[in-house]
Length: 227
Image 1 (cartoon, rainbow, N blue to C red):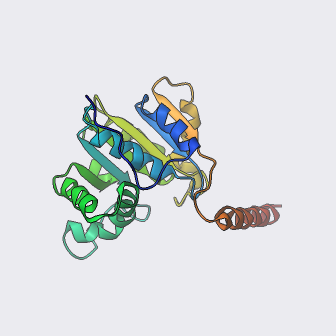
Image 2 (cartoon, rainbow, N blue to C red):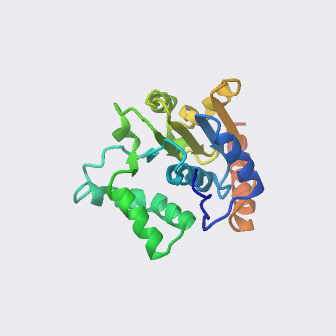
Image 3 (cartoon, rainbow, N blue to C red):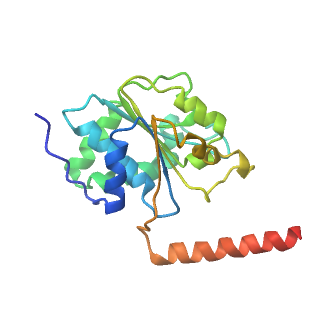
C-alpha cells in the first residue's frame, strides 16, 4: 500500500494541481511561464512527491540548469562542491522551501544529496548519462539551445520522466532565436509530451506590471530604431 501524500510546505494552486495531474501521466513535459508563475516550484513538487512515495519506481532526482556564460567551471576556485555552490543554491533553497525547512526535513534532504539520490548538475555534466528510474528537471531551459534539448531528451531511459521549466521572455543566450523554447510548439501533437503555460503570478503583483512595462518600452524602442 502506498504512503500517504506528502504535506508540502507550499501548497499548489488550482492551475498547478491541474498541470501536475497530467505531468504524472506523461514522460516529457514542458512548463512555460513568466517570472513567478511557479514553474520550478511545480517541477520540484512533482519530483519530491514521486521520489518519496513508496508506490513508484523512481529512485533519484536529477536537476540540471544551463550555464549561459560557460559550462566550464574549472576557472572557479576550490573543489567541485565549492565551484557549484552558488549554482546549486537557488534550487536547494527551492527544495527546502517546498518540502519544509525544519531540521528533520533539511537533514533528510541533505542525506539524499550525500547519497547522490538527489543531484544538481550543469548540463555539460549530463552528457553520456542515461536517466533511469529518475525524475529529471531542466530548469531555466530557455537558455538551452535546441541541440542541448535534443541531447537531454536523448538521455531518457526507461521508467524516467523529464520536466523542462522555462520562460519565453527570460532568454539570456547571445542569440535569442537559438533558444530551445522556440521549438516546443513543434511537439504539441506528440503523444509523449505535455506542454503547459502557467498564467498565475505567485510573487508580488508589481513583478508582472513592472516587467511588462519595461518590455513594452524596449519593444517600442527597437521598433523605432529599426524604422
